[in-house]
Length: 161
Image (cartoon, rainbow, N blue to C red):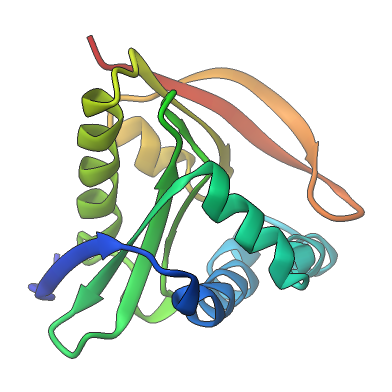
C-alpha cells in the first residue's frame, strides 16, 4: 500500500457534484472495464449524465469525500441513516492506496451512530473482493438495470452489532 496522505474525509457539498460525476464515470469506464463489457460500462457510466439525479441522491444519502494533501477529491462514498450504502468510488489514478478502506470505515461509523444494525449495498463484480475483506457477505447475486442494460452485481451486507 502506498502512503498517500488523506488529509481529510469531509461531508460532500452540492458544489462537488461535477467532480464526483467525472470521478464516477472515469472509474467505471477504466477500473470496472476488467469485469464488464464496453457496452455495460458505458451504460453504467451514463447513469449520472443527468445531474439532477445526483442532487436527488444527495437528499437521500449522506455523502462524504476523501481529499488528498492537495485538496484533490480522490474518492467518495454515501450511506443513508438505515445503513444502505449507495456509492463507494475511488479515482482511477488512486486505486489500492487505502482510500476505499478509509471511506468505508467512516461510513460504517456514521451508520452505527445513526443506529443502523447492518450496512447493505449493491456491489459490482469489481468491488466484491474489497467488500468481502471488510467483512461483508454475499446475500444474493442479481442482475440490476444500470441505465438501459442489466448488469450482474451482488447484494451484500455486514452486521454491525
